[in-house]
Length: 326
Ligand code: HMG
Ligand code: MG
Image 1 (tube, rainbow, N blue to C red):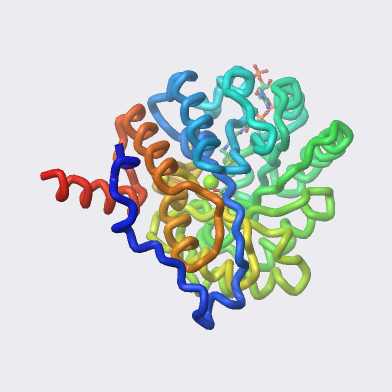
Image 2: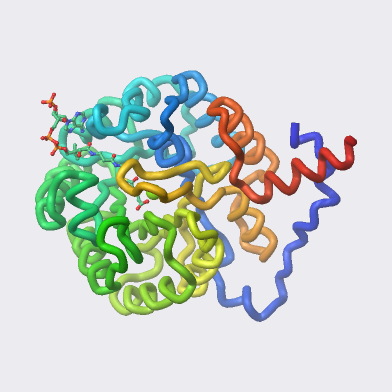
């Protein structure tokens, strides 16, 4: 167990007094997406009991927002087919928001019946990705989302809006920041409380994120934005740092770097929660999370999936613990 590792040797001493961190958010909320994004693309579906363990382990680590499932067409995304059962199977903590993706009214009805605390609609800044992912144009997606927003709001359920392909599209290549702005503003205007900017392919760099956020911040307050970075090109932490510099304090991540989209071939997992927490806490930015418990959650999930763990922090500590033991 990594929890037996001697944490005092891990240099996580926050540096509070450097000029750089003074202007950054002092606290960041992590939206943990491993039970949804992390598992939706797995060829071997994780059994329900293991999903329950994952969600409960994440709660123990201190996460306050867990995206636990997805109410989409189960034929398109089979690993999410048991989301209805999952929501009634894990132990709920009243101070945690348990959310799920919904693509349409049908999905919302399922989500409400399952007792979700919050839902997320998911659009894209790329026409082709929109067609491939949700079988409609960007404009049609707004028509689908509006009744979802109206009905969710009437039921007292908040709605988050994802925008995929904020930098790059697996089909169209580079996406212009103005296309992202258009979709983001529309989702907020329709009633989403925040827009999560999805770097679906992970191709973004600090340069492209700076360009994008410099445009968005003219009209969208930072508190209405979150970053959802896939780490395919190893740029996610650097991109998150740019987000912090633009005042963004809500970050999506996934333990063990699990994740992927069935409609973005070759794109790898989300940025690992363990790595985000290590970076933020090391900068004196509070996350409220227990790193050792997160590492255990990621490791258990990887073992159940038979997959390597992509959290660099976990890899480093496992190697160190092995050296000490051996
Ligand atoms: P469609 O084919 O246009 O839908 O798909 P439809 O209304 O014609 O229905 C087709 C069939 O699906 C029907 O069944 C419906 O009942 C059923 P049939 O009559 O053939 O037996 N159906 C449903 N069943 C259960 N729940 C539902 C539902 N809706 C329809 N909610 C649809 C449109 C959007 C539903 C479909 O394309 C779909 O489910 N897509 C899922 C795409 C997806 O989950 N992608 C991965 C998540 S997005 C992502 O990962 C990116 C993100 O992480 C951010 C980033 O990284 O960029 C969020
Ligand atoms: Mg994603």
